[in-house]
Length: 206
Image (cartoon, rainbow, N blue to C red; front, side, top):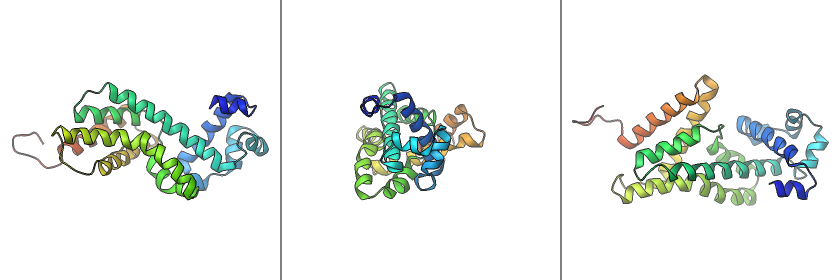
């Protein structure tokens, strides 16, 4: 990203500030409800100056924000899983600890609402990297557990999407007075439900 900014003759720090502001607005409100004027005001610059940073307008900013976010999460998930060992529960908890420890992303809304609004070609171009960054690592966790006989043979993509939906909801609990420790505890509880189920089995604590 620094190389892109320098190639455009722009200070990378200013461009990062624009992306930070745009990211916060897109995550909080969604692509359709954010205007370039609002991004400019939040960044403390004129709208004309904002278009200097993003000649392609809001779609360009959204694309760059999305690409930066998924690259950040992909690297973080890879690090988290590398130290989690082979068992299912610790690996899912490592995923959860990383995800809820970051700024809320609202990944599923971005995939199902924001990206389609960019158009078919743009949405398709972003969907592949998004899947590889967030869905695929979790899918592989479930697939590995099934191969090891640790989990029933179910659709691993469905399980990965369900876990991301849960973690999205937990991550947004921050705005309701929950701290990071509380969010981790909630995520671990839901992972225990996912791994163990809700039914009380004789001989196993409820």
